[in-house]
Image (cartoon, rainbow over all chains, first blue to last red; front, side, top):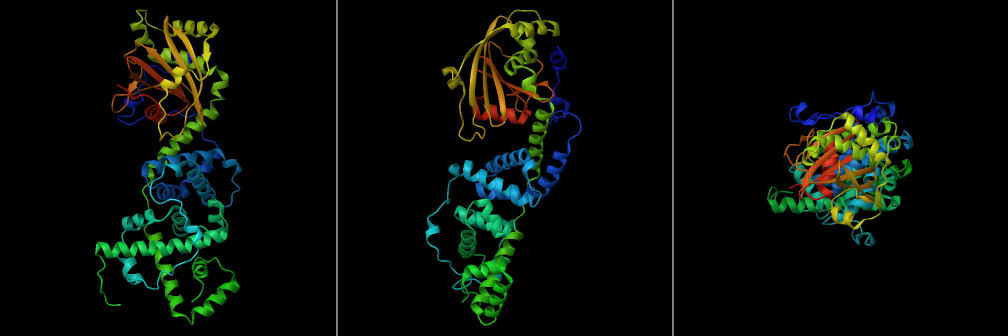
Length: 212
Length: 242
């Protein structure tokens, strides 16, 4: 009958918290695993969500992916070797995305570009000087350009240039050889620069015929 | 011009000391390669400089999920302490007991009568049907549902003399139950959510119930999850409230 006695009939978590749902009751103090995990996870969280957002290109799906990755990481936290939490959890994010979310995506994803290993230079033949191009961009334009990159290049560039992961960490996270990572980063950046340049010219914030 | 992937690796600090020295030596005599290096650095800097995302609300949601995991772990394995489906049935009687009793023309349900239901239910041997066709009908799988629900069993049972049905299923995080109660139109002891379509009730610490009305019946989803997650599963996997 202990169970019967513990039931809290008639309580309104909605009313009690004046418009916000009450936080479910916890059993005592959090244990050290939870505290340690939160310490690591909070520091890496913007990377986790940012990567999820740039992979899924949908805030709703990014939230789902992030929550699932956090839960999985928490459940597997005992197996974390203590070295690099961000790389470890981003590997979870990436693998979750590849195994579960990728099929739902629309737009540029996997491409056959991998077979064409020619790497284009970024600066040669560009119509706009780097400083003029990069200084004129705002965050939305950069994010929109990233969204247009095929998935494997987008992932490599995001992990390298935004998350500052090493080639080896990216190779581990994406399950490809390190040489492929190197190639994807170089080619992804070249593609990204072209997308940004085309965008700048199209939108007119950089005019043709500037003084080189 | 220096091999392009090597220039990218140089900027990224991925070359050995000897490779770095070689690249730097060749850069001195190649303006095209120097321009490429400048361009790579500029792009990297631009990406990093625009990388902030607003995610404080998502972190809060994640912590709520972690709370739920902790609660389940710390409840001493609730499901093994009690027969899960059995507890669900009893708990739901408690949550909506008043409403159910009114519609069944019975006296109000108090804790002593609940104890009787509890004891009586325990002796029942409900009919269990694996992958029941009605379960297939009831479960409306949604494409975006993350936690694909795996049906476990259907149990036909009687609560206060009225037929009801309990669907047990699970996702990657464990078991849940859905109780289908015909002729129920109100949820006593449960609080409405913001839009008034779903009703929340706490069965015991860590075990929550979310109810809603569908086609003249009450559906109540019970699990060791928080309200938001249960409502999300309810919205994405089952018929929407009327």
